[in-house]
Image: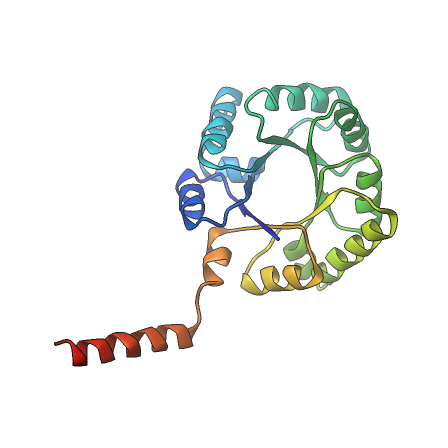
Length: 218
């Protein structure tokens, strides 16, 4: 499973990259705003800064909700760096844009997926990735992991190449559950990735090892 980090914070991206397990980055307008990145030129420069840090794909989201606007923005975004994947919302005009970009060989990430039907249509339109929002579904007492599994089953049934990117991952158990059902990618905060490293018995064991070493080598 690929690990993406869902942030626009350059320090967090650098830290995740330094771990050696980072495969890419996802961003959205909310994450850009959180970092105080506003204005088209500043946003474009920030995307380039992200691409300069990571080795893998960087999802950059369009703002337009009409076909022409999405195409215009997407074509501008892919000029930034070859790592850019154009992030398109799951709406009717977005499906048209997915098909257009697919015909041009431009990679896409269809975001705001909340049902298997949406994921099926996005795959038929040629999306490179689909992003089902696991955490947001869990927030309304719906089985987010179950949706990931359902989409994967449908894609296997028909041989779709579209990758399932589990989004809105909140904690380490989400990551483990996504891995168990076979999600191609997960994207979440640095805290969730780092939490995978932690276990109290590891800390206790290390403390014991070091204590015993000091006793014998004082």
